[in-house]
Length: 162
View 1 (cartoon, helix red, strand yellow):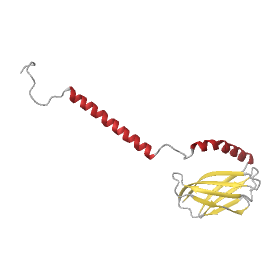
View 2 (cartoon, one colour):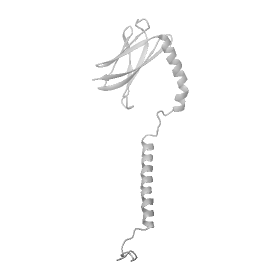
View 3 (cartoon, one colour):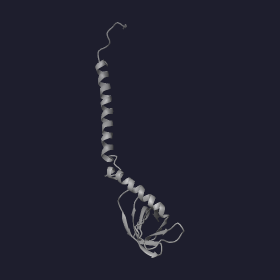
């Protein structure tokens, strides 16, 4: 058998076979990437808020409220107790701030499920307690206090019940 003899009969890999292999490979890559992109958008569309434009407009009001709160000089502590949440507010001299209307809520850090709305009552001057059955775990607490003159104070804390 010499180099000039025709090759034996059987399968021959031609240019058409090569073209089919390349087209098939890229078709699989494009189909896989497309399916991943569709799944990604369906499972998380990228929205953090349902009303982002309105949230942006409200940001100036939020900054003004934070500046007014800083001028008050109030400080707050929050404690996770067995069947309650204790919220204490003091002014810049350390004196208890009494006779406030206090509300609050607990939310799980990673989900909106299980929100608990808290109703506080003043147990002693400057100390407000909300009774609630709180499941074990970590919670984000948001407390809101309003004084007689309209002074508003907001505080956020992470709390854990064991």
